[in-house]
Length: 137
Picture 1 (tube, one colour):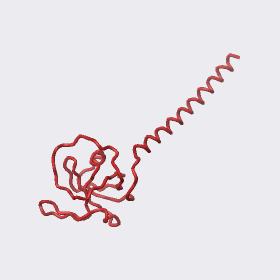
Picture 2: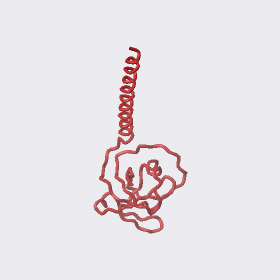
Picture 3: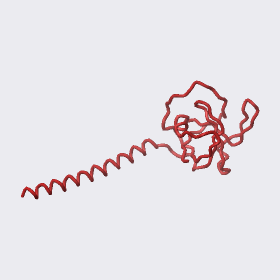
């Protein structure tokens, strides 16, 4: 009788562990959905980081189908860049550790995930066109 009771307890524990495991997986998915609660404004495209300084990043679009998301811009030294924009969500973008001249996959999204971070007080002239980016690599 006691062995049957222990066997029943083991089965109940296994069922509870399975239930807890499934429930925790579900809550992880919900956290990711909330964190990534951004709406896509564009499909994924290839871009290149042209220059960066502190919280300022200039990105050039490499896929011709998405050139309309960029602009032509001339910096203070007279160098002209085609199909570029400034990254609005610099906290999210800088967390990706993209290097200058690196080509990466990304999409334009409606809002930043991380909107506060530490950045130096430097300034760099950038294009007036701003986009929030989600890097897809």
